[in-house]
Image 1: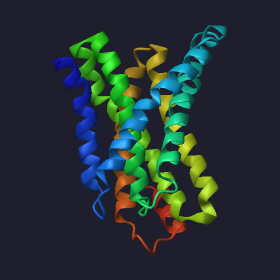
Image 2: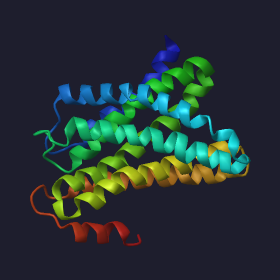
Image 3: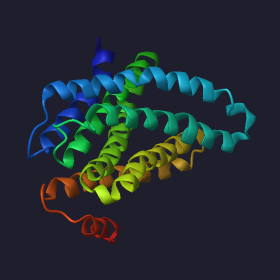
Length: 234
């Protein structure tokens, strides 16, 4: 029971944080529950696809194999089905009426997946695994969701940029996910420093994206102006 609580605690803590960051109009609990459930259910098609793609991992030399496993097996498979779940759940929903809603629902879907994955890992690996994943893997999944939701939320309201923003909503989380896993899969000790720096980057970028969308006017925002703010050096 303690391991189960440890597995799910970071999921619900992050979910609560995202919920309270949505300061304009809270999303209905029914849809939030379905978002978590949808994310949890993506485990099934993801496992099927990853099992198939893993058959080819041994065809490559060590580091190329690590890249294939990180970017294709994990990053591509997991973020693809999260994106599909997000699109099916809210793209045509009347509740998707603010840009920040993209972040809320995408993050909840990611947390649904992360919750199931975390339970499996922690029950197998024990307390130490649970503690390490609580500050690394679960927040990372949430950050991939925040990134996806950021661009997905913009795509909903900027029709002239819709295709580009949807593409970014899918590909950028895949890239971040792939880099995260590749650092771990290589097994190189010196990359530990890189991993810590990358984690800090993920945390900062996620907070920045949430702040950007949260501060945007619901009715009067300019995408080009936002894009300039995001690309302008601090």
